[in-house]
Length: 386
Image 1 (tube, rainbow, N blue to C red):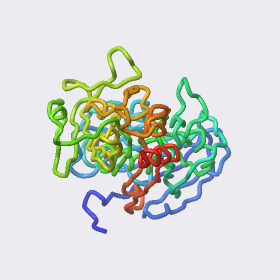
Image 2 (cartoon, rainbow, N blue to C red):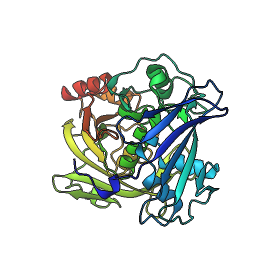
Image 3 (cartoon, rainbow, N blue to C red):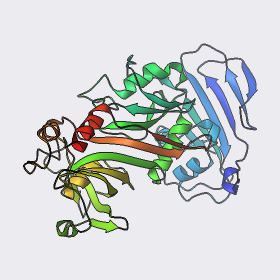
Image 4 (cartoon, one colour):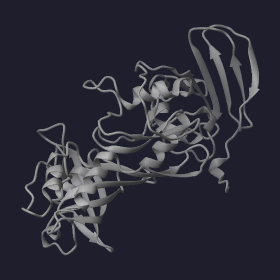
């Protein structure tokens, strides 16, 4: 492993304190040369003091300097630090600072007071999960179609987070000050496939940074109407659509919430957020071809991105209730059984098949694959015979 200068931290002290005076016992932090002290009192609130010094050539903003120099063993994400700054829980040379844009000098002594992770208000539920991988820092799940990732007003229970709270139990060390799974990316309720979830604040911060930097490998399989092809003159006239070598369709637009329907996303070219999807045709079905199995991969990760982009290209996903609609297929292009199965497919035919990333704590390269779920696999069988 190559160690860069930015990876060498000045010694930091992490001290557990409490609302009452308590006896403390020094212990060495696992995997570091720092010392911490641990409270053994049974008080109602447990706090930590994280003390460190701003190193040479700090960034011009306090929030960025804190994020750069806070010790890794403190497990404080940039978002958590921003929240603590706003709460007045951070002092610089003994004075509370709240302005994230303030300039801090090298050598400034920082003290961050953190309340230990509290139990989440979300209730654990005993729901069976398909766990692909798990260790002390993260868990990779193959989510079934029909399961919402995180509780919301319309779905307060039965979610992936409810299930993970029950599955992980006391193994959750705290994300953002709360004992809860750290959701760094989501897939839609009716999309199946792979998700990685953080079990610790350190993992949450590391995974979020990889997603933000677009360093996570994500491949999806989907079934669409029509067959995208570089020879199609219609596609050459679609704004934002182009083809790369190997007949790879590239869709480059901006996406934003629809002006009149808040449940939908809309393609824009001014405003919104930059979005790039690539897709290649894996298999064609029908005589003439009327359905395609596609492999899509994301350069960005926006809400409904593949569904919106493929619809924009004129190749909506089969079964998509929001963007796809029902399309009339040419007579006799498919067998009656296959045509019936396509028309009655009751969710978007989209599956998160591959997920690859660097382990946020160990640095190990991880890559996972999930087979197509039964409903899409059965549909493919009918299409291949018709």
